[in-house]
Length: 364
Image 1 (tube, one colour):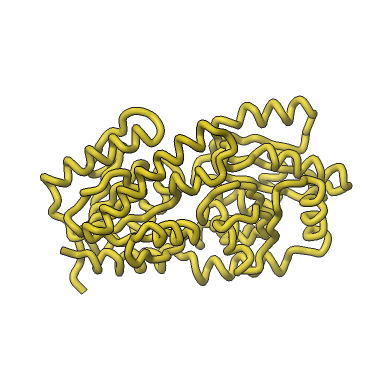
Image 2 (cartoon, rainbow, N blue to C red):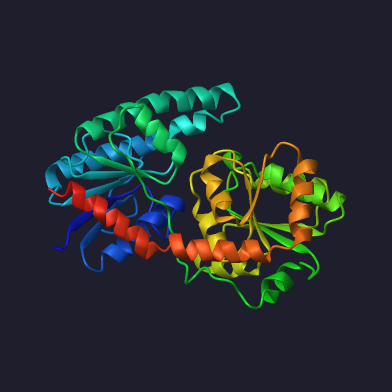
């Protein structure tokens, strides 16, 4: 088939950023071997458009500038938009990928202010998505909840495309001792790993309560938290006040150091209250880690792959009992299932070809 000229538009791009940045980068890098791929983001590298302001208001200003620039410079066969916030981008040749939505965040907001903020932006997003759909854009997501949301507002034929991971880079380690020794984790202790932003949506304090409950129940466990965020200081204070010597806060960890961290752990832990199919979960599965995750739609893949345990994240003692049962019964089968499922389903080469098919459908 003929090659395409593709523009990738995202509010963050590797090596800066996390989820969106990594998805966009990996697909762009692979498709760039046989197609002409340009990237537009606040950091470039091909087209640099600054994002002004804060939060979703700042992101909206970025997308308005993208729309203005493209109105004069759209020579592309397909334009790939990650979580756009304005309509009229592209000329019917856009593929829109949604990683999260304001409606999803509103559904789990526990306080009036963020709920009202996200509800207003949900209304704004829905207007934008309906307009883009009527202009001919195609939609993709890896989140079953977002699929239902899109269908509910009349977006035509959204496609379900999973996120991916580098299954060669994220793979099991034969020797797990180096990281354990560096962090002071005893050989007989279970090493639980949490990777991601330390923010309210990730429910990080519950992880600390869970590890404390495990210790109370007689299970020696160490929790390693890799990531920064606005709740990191609060979590450090919580652990310090309770003299939790078995919790290690690493702060932001460079991406190229994550494979060794995953490969050295025994279990992956995620207690998010809202999330799509997170890259950290896929990286953990690819590293053959059994996964302990909150029971939300974005983690249903753990049940499908039979590679771990879902916990309600309401009662630390009850959840600790389930985790303890998993540890005591052995996790070798879950580890093998995790690795096998990741290799068969999450390889970026397969994911990039699925996106290429979407780009061909909107080619001008």
